[in-house]
Amino acid sequence: NIPDITESSTIYVGNLDPRITKLDLYELFIQFGKIYKINYPRDKISENYQGFAFVEFQSAKDSNYVLSLFQNNNQNNYNNQLSISLYGKPIKIRPQNNQLKDKKNNQQFILKKN
Amino acid sequence: DAEWKSKTKDLGPGKLSSRMRNIIGLKAGQLPPWIHKMKELGLPPSYPSLKIVGLNWDISDLVDGIYGTLEDTSSGNSIESG
Image 1 (cartoon, chains in turn red, brown):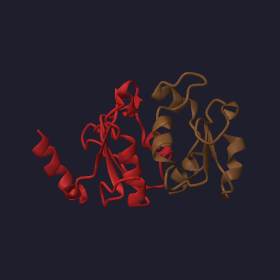
Image 2 (cartoon, chains in turn purple, yellow; image 1 turned 180 degrees about the horizontal axis):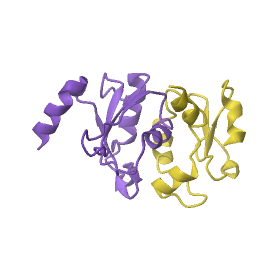
Image 3 (cartoon, rainbow over the protein chains, first blue to last red; image 1 turned 90 degrees about the horizontal axis):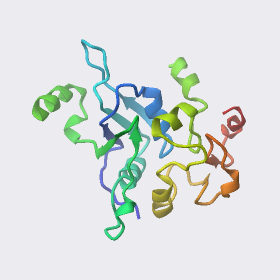
């Protein structure tokens, strides 16, 4: 009963506290599926993490499972919503936008967002 | 690389370090917040043999940092070192 939300095996994780390390992300998301790769970009000048990451699982089955975990799929039960807060900040989980697949497009995404 | 491999080799489903439990804000004996959703959705597709507390593993098995276990995997003997 896991819906196919995305064909991509990668998810976007946002609202990350700068104290979160790549290893922390690995430790958390390995709970939900086998991880292929984590892209956790830093600012080129300040070298601080930018507050978001792309977690690539080994298959789209894994990413769909994670997206389902964070979805409210029972309208009658408000407690159904999973929220995970890291250092008190609730993380945001979204399907990877296909436009972001290419690293070169990250810059465009930031411009669009602002 | 080799350094990343050695850092991640003891990490896996069912195990949370004290650092991670602090980051999530889990108190001693408290289950991770995703257990109730796993009950509803079933186990992660990558881990069909996972046993977790509150789902298919006895609550008395809960010790700090370990809320589940993977049965019969080649790396399964690393659990004691956690």
